[in-house]
Amino acid sequence: MPDLNSLKLKSQSPKKINSAVRRLLSELQLPEKNIEFLKYKKPDRFRPESDNCHFNVWVMCNYHGGGATHGWIISQDTKNDFIEAQFHTVWRHPDGRLVDITPRKDGEKRLMFVLDELRQIELSDHEGTPAIISYDNFRILRGITISGLQRIKIVPQSSFIYDHGLAIVK
Image 1 (cartoon, rainbow, N blue to C red):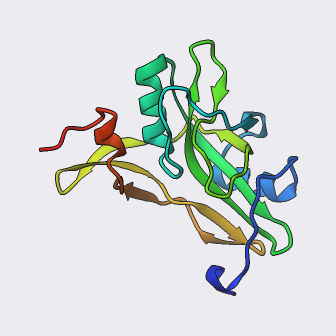
Image 2 (tube, one colour; image 1 turned 45 degrees about the vertical axis):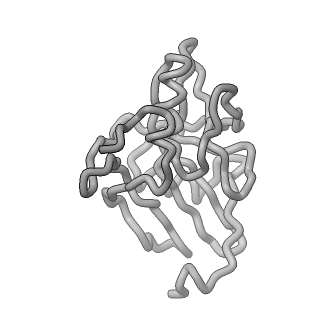
């Protein structure tokens, strides 16, 4: 089995539901009806960070109300028969619409999001610093699950949570 680092993956959100997406949903025990295609929308009152969706949504809720909705971003590289799900949080507007406010490093503006009502993030800490317990990416390469459903701790790597009053420096 090739190492993911040796492959030149070019994963993007699938444009439609296909057999690989259905397999991934089955592995995660999520119904197809939970899929929504969301476009990125930049917030107007702060600059969100890529790879920081959970905290971005928390800041958005502080500014505009609404709530957090957890699920998975699906991305796929059909050439290499690779698909993955990344645990993700989007903002639920007070009117009920789901809005993705987290910019992607790859610049992708539209994503396949799958609502997950089974799993949530948990607040935690790491050596006195706020952290989140979330889920690692779920990956399938050439029909074989290469990283399954695992809980992970995410420790913020920037001052974002302090800059927006989500944590206080001791």
